[in-house]
Image 1 (cartoon, one colour):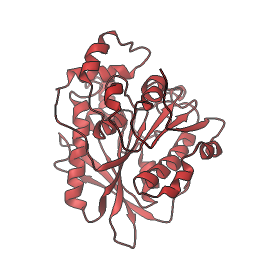
Image 2: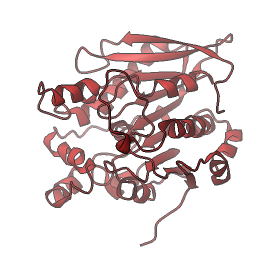
Image 3: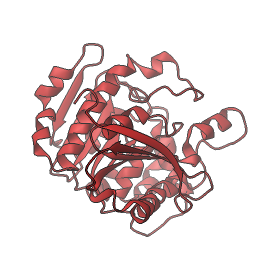
Image 4: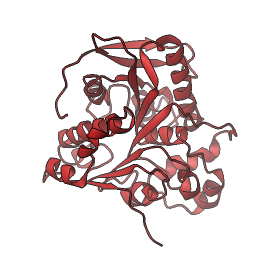
Length: 329
C-alpha cells in the first residue's frame, strides 16, 4: 500500500451553494474510476490554518487510487489566502471571526450536500475524516468532543502562549458566539487527527466523549501544537476502544504538508527533515487505518502495528506507532 493501486481517478472542483457561509465554497472531489457501480466509501480531508485544498491533494489521490471517494473543502476563513492577506496588511485577523464554529458546521453542510447530490455513488455508512491542526480540531468536534468553554474561561487568563502557540487559537474561541447545538455527526465512523489542538478547547472531560476509532499523529519538534500537551497526554483521554498514536520523531507541524506553489513558504528549520518521509508514512498508515475501520477490512490491521512502523521507519525521521496506552496519575 505504499504505491498507488490499480484504480485510476478523476478530480473535479465543485461549488456547493449551501456548503459554506460565504461564496468561496470550493470542494475538490476525487473519484476512482471503477467498472462496478456499487457505492464507494468517502474520506473528507480538512486542511489547517494557512493551508488550502491542494495541501493534501497527494493524499487524496492516494486514497482515490485505492477506491475511496475523497472530498477536500476549502475553509476560506483560515486558508492560505487568509494568511497572505494578514501578511500583506489586507486583514487584521489570523482567522476570521467565528471560524472555529463555522468549520464543523461547514463540514456537516458538505455531508448533507453530498448525500443530496451523490447518494448513489457514496456509501454514507463508510465515512472517514482526516484533518491537520485546525482541521483536526474540526474533526474531533464532529465526532463527539464538544467545546469546553468553561475550561477555556478558567485557564486562558494564565495560559503560556509562548510555550504553546496553539493556545492563541484555543483561547480565541472565547471571542466566538457560544452555541448549544450538538455538532456531532454520526456519519463519520473513523478519524485521523494530525497535530490536533486539544488541551483547553476540549480538555479531558470532552475529549473523553470520542468513542469511534481514532488516530492521533504528532511531531516531536512541533512548537505550534506541542506533542506532549496537545497529542500524547490527550490521546490517553480518548474513550475509543481502537485508538492509535503515531509519532514522527523530529517531525514538525508542517512535515505532512505538501508544498503548494503560491502559498506562504516556511523556513527549512520549521519544516524539519525531508517532508517526503512523513508524507510516505502518512499515505501507508492512514490508508490502512481507514480500510480497517472505515471499510471494515480487518486484514489491514497488520499495518497498524509497532513492528510494521519499525519496518517503515527511516533514520532521518524515526516512526513510532502505539496503540491504546493510558497515562497513570
